[in-house]
Amino acid sequence: MSKRDTYTITASRSDDWWALTVSGPGLKRSFHTQVKRLEQAEDMARDLVVTMLNADVSEVDAEFDLTVADDEVATELEATLMTRLAATVVRQKAAEATHATVADLARRGYVHRDIGYLLGMSHQAVGKLLNEEEKGTTASAEDASTRSLRELLDRLHTTGDTEALFKSYLLEVSAGDPPDRKLNRLRALGEQLRHGARRRLTDA
Image 1: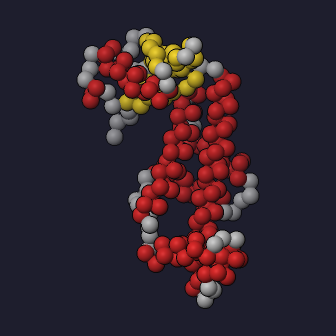
Image 2 (image 1 turned 90 degrees about the vertical axis):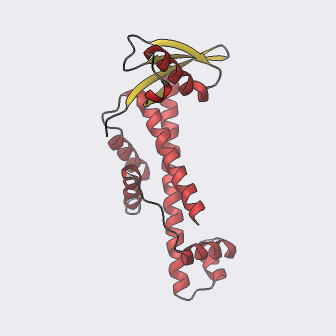
Image 3 (image 1 turned 30 degrees about the horizontal axis):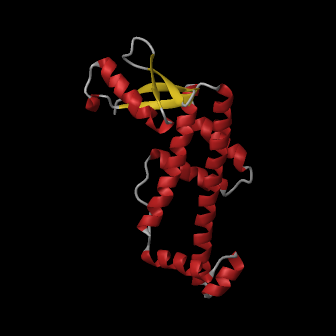
């Protein structure tokens, strides 16, 4: 599969608006536009690119990476997104460990209330986990990025230095990315983790 084009959107505050600077493949120079809310930035930038390239919107199959012009804010966002991602990974690992332990104790003959007491959870929650176990709930096929996250979860089980390990992982997946792609990569990883959690709940 060929690599998709990537356009950069640099956003800066302008009174009650966001001023956008869009640059990327096929554009002879940077172009400017504006939006009221950042969630509108990608659609606006895509429309601008389509217009400048005199192309149909269906012909522009590209990624749009948004960053803020304020370096201090960008650094703060990066640190916060990284911390939230680390917390999400640890929560998912804790949920998997809890599920496995509940199932193991039930196989050993422990009743729901005793399992709940030992793990600090309600007997209703124990019953829900065991019902999922009986249904044989399995995750859908994973892509390469999700498998990489799964490997990270396994590694977290054997180390207490979660923050250092997670930072190492992020450095690995973002190797070669220009600085203005960091925030998008972090947001994408967060959405991937949330999507995986929602998918498991739906499958259950």
